[in-house]
Amino acid sequence: MKRKLIRNLSLALIALVGFFSLVFSFEGRTNAASLTSNPDQDLKVDTVDGIKYTPDKHKKIVGMVVEATDQGEKVHGFSTPEKYEAYHQKVTEGLSSQSIGIMARPTYLYEHTSGHGYGRSLIAYPGTQVTSLSTAWDNRISAVSVAPGSWIRLYQNRYYGGHYLTLVSYPNKYFTTNLTSWGMSGTTSWNDQVSSYRLR
Image 1 (tube, rainbow, N blue to C red):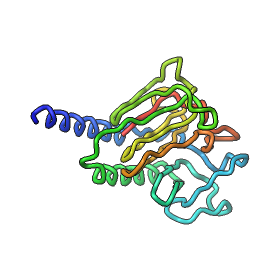
Image 2: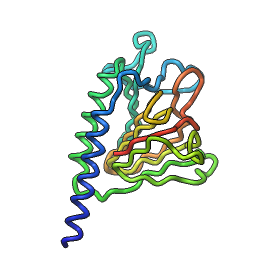
Image 3: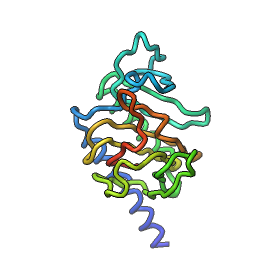
């Protein structure tokens, strides 16, 4: 009983530390994932700043959050880093309240896409922060399976720099996606572009 209580308190503390480090670590100069600059991929944006997306009206998207819900994937774009962070904080608070009592499950980062059998995987638990992937994994991640009630923010560069993409999974099931599905800039997808990440 005492061990279980200590383990539960430890998990809660890890989640809080991860959350606060994320909130206070945002740098305004970091570039977010861009959907509008990748015309070669069929990307679907549902809303920008809470308004239904239209390509003519929404020319600038500085950040995006991909959510897996019971109704499918929803892609939210944001016109400023501040709006992106405010929405991300709201989602984090919602996940925290929904995840009470859920055992911490691992998130998986895969070497290949689903079409290539995923290959090797990295296993990460809530609270994990990797500032620099090892040489064997740097720019090698092609798919991610986000644990129920968790989110992961992927960064293009080491030490949380460059473009970033947040994937959110709600408490009912894993959210698995190929990074080839998400554009970064120009004609570049997120496939084989990740150098650091944060997980909650």
